[in-house]
Length: 174
Image 1 (spheres, rainbow, N blue to C red):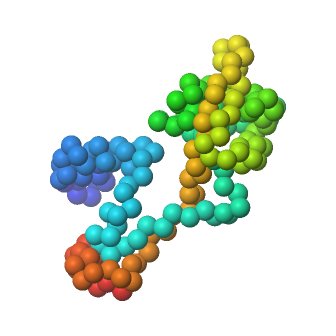
Image 2 (cartoon, rainbow, N blue to C red):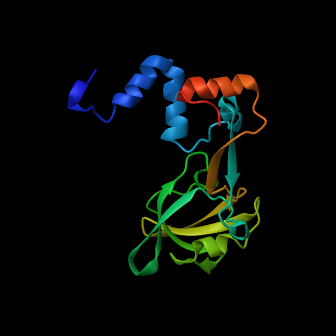
Image 3 (cartoon, one colour):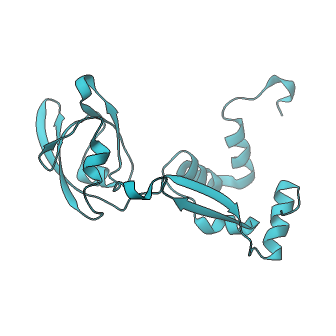
């Protein structure tokens, strides 16, 4: 389509949507541009496995759905609130200045340490400044999310999956 001219940023998505239709558009939005995880069994079609692990299993931080950034003087600003996360359900919003967790002041270098002291399903109180007004929101932490993913060959992959692998990549299943 584009020859030697190069192609616009949207070309790959548009081609995928032309081939896969509206369903593929929804999956791209969820898995590539959103925070949804693909179903792990999808990899088995081609004789692969998806392993979700922790880089450091001793440092599991319960999931809050808060993406933070450092503000002036080491303060913590909420940069993003992930969709359908505990933070969104609690009512937190981008732009909030995160002041305290269960009454303890938070600093940009210690939020993970503070959160790691709580178990999943714990209810915590998040105190923020929003538009110069101090507000507190209850937030229920979810289990820690793996931070390291590997796609590996499945040594027990059936012949059909090995054939799909070969058709997909054009090389024999190792």
